[in-house]
Amino acid sequence: MKTLYFAAPSGISGNMTLAALLEIIEDDNYLLNELKKLHLDGYEIIIKKTNKNHIHAKHIEVKVEESHVHRHLSDINKIIDDSDLNFNVKSLAKKIFLAVAKAESKVHDIDIDEVHFHEVGALDSIIDIVGTAILIDKIHPDKIYGGEINEGKGFINCAHGLMAVPVPATLEILKEHQIPFKQIDVETELITPTGAAIFATLVEKVQDMPRGKIIKTGYGAGTKDIKVPNILIALLLEEEVKMNEEEVYVLNTNIDDTTGEILAYVQEKLISLGALDVSFSPLYMKKNRPAYKLEVILKLGDLNKISEVIFLETSSIGIRYRKEKRLTLKREEVRIDSIYGTLIGKKVYTSNGIKIYPEFESLKEVAKKNNVALKDLYDLFIRITSDGN
Image (cartoon, rainbow, N blue to C red; front, side):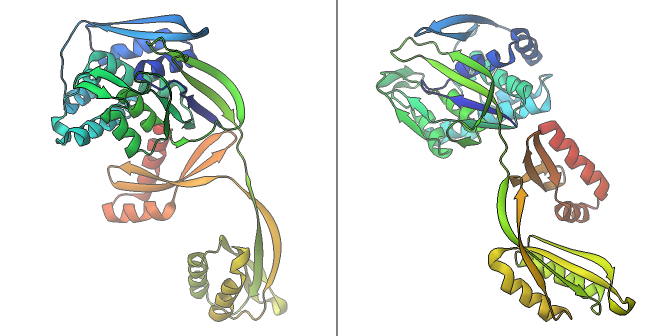
């Protein structure tokens, strides 16, 4: 499974993220050509190598001609929507800007539509955020994790005047997304609002670096010369996918005089009580009677309640059971937004990457509600998840 991991011992900013990711894809022209799809001018991107405390890193500077431009969220969304970038890039970039807008709205106690994007609305930050979305889409990781972020201390000057570090917008983003950070003995800002919003939007979980083989490394340099290396580290890993091993009971009984309707009801009831799997197999019993073999996989603590239901609801008078071990892949529920509403699926982690499967019952309910063909809804789910993953 391809995992992207951010290590931020010296904080995170937009240009640091962009530079670190660009080192991973190793193709400066790809980024420059994709950014042309924004149809913006008045800026120049300078990409160069630099040293931060003897660590070789990439640095990106966006020089802009304009000044004192204050944009609203709607203005930035229009720039993104009017571009020729693909859907995934547009969606991710807008999510990052939204994270900043929500924080600014909360800090200044104004409606989100009234937020003026000062530094973040300038062209350099548009390039940083949209560029980050472009490179994430190109790298296409299955998972994105990050470590604890370090922040400086003291005060800095910004568009709102002299501010304590962390600045209020950054602090609000860190609080809202429950991102752990630690202040170190450096008298400056290390986590910018843009950097915090990128981290909050991209990173699914803050944790130690997962076990796996490192495929590529990227070092993104910041603009400051401080006593610690002002760099963000991005690591692309081939993460080991662990299978879960657990003990279960496998229970079965043969039933030859219970109707199919009742057996279907029994199956639903057993599932609702926590059975892990319930299946029927046709067979012939003594005297050539057609029958069904009921097999149930269940947790060790559920044997009595599952057995009681079978005895109560069927004609079975005897149940066999045995303890077995089973291996399972990690899975989790996902919710996909569509024009017909929310579709529920299952995300499964394999050694070859993530696979997403639709949950049939969810699709069935949405299909009935919207009077749409189930097959069309299934195809839509596959198309959305294929584009987004």
